[in-house]
Image (cartoon, rainbow, N blue to C red):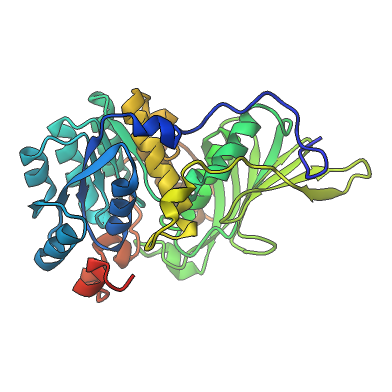
Length: 392
C-alpha cells in the first residue's frame, strides 16, 4: 500500500537529500560571483546571500546603471562589465550565470577556464546542441560541478517522490504521461522533460510526435508549437505526450500500485484500492529544511525549488559530489533541449521516429526573444528602482 493520512508508509528512513542549516553553519563560506543581474539574477543573488556557507563576492552585469544599483543593494564592491573580467580578477569558488541564453556559452567557458569549483546556469541552456555540449564537456574535463538552475524538478517534494520511486516504494513503473507539452517546448516544456527523467530514472530514447499549427514547424523557434505523440524511454517504458492541458498539465508516472503526478506543485500520490479504484493519498513529505530562506521578500513560497536547486549545488561543491548528484545539472538542461529538438524534428516528418542521442549536434531550436536576448533588448527593461529592491 502507498502512504495515506490514516496509514503512513512504513519503510527504512529516507537518506538526507540536502545538508541541514546546522551542518552548513559550520562550513567555510564559498565565494560566489553572479553573471547577469537582471530580474532572475537578483533572485539567485538573494538566495546566495541568505545561505550560511556562501558569500556573494562579485557581480558581472553589462548594464552600467543596474550594475551599480544591484551592487549597492547586495553590498558587493567587486563589480564588472562581463564574466571574463570578473573571473580573471576575483578568486571565486562558484559562478552563477543567469544571462539571456545567447550569452551563456561564452560565460560558462570563461568561468570553466578560470578554474572555479562550480558553475551554475539557467534554462534554456542553449539554442544549439553543439553549444550545450561544449559547456557540459568543458566542465566535465575540468571536474567542475555544472549545475542547472530554476527548474521544477528541484522542488523538495519532487526530489523526495523520485527518491521513493527509486527505492521501489510505489512498485514497478509501468508507463508515463506528459500533458500540456507545447507553446514553448525549449523553455517551459523543458520542465516536463526534466521532471519525467527524474521520476522515471530514464532518458528519452526515441520520439514519434506530431505538431500543430503547421506554420510553427517551419519557423526557427518553437513558439506556439504544440506536440502530441509518444516517447520511448531508455528503460523500455512508453510515455504518451499530449498538448492538451486537461485533466492536468504536467507529468504522471504510473506504477503497479498507483501513480505519482507532478503538476507544477508538490507531486500528488494515488493508490489503487482493493476495489480497483484509484484514490489520492497523503504522501507525508518531510519538511523542507531550508524553508526559512523564503521568509523575507522578494523571495516567495513558490521559490522553494530555486532555493533547493542552489542548495543542492552548494552541497555538491562542498562535499565533492559529482554533477550527477545535483537536483538540476547542466546535463539535465541539455537533455531537455535535445528532446525538444527531436520532438520538433519528428513532427516535421509527420511522426517519423527519431532516435536519441541525435547524431547531428548542429541542430538548434531558438527560444523566445525574451529568453534569448533578455528584457532590455525586447522592450521589457527593469527600472533602476526595481533593481534596487526598493519596491519589494
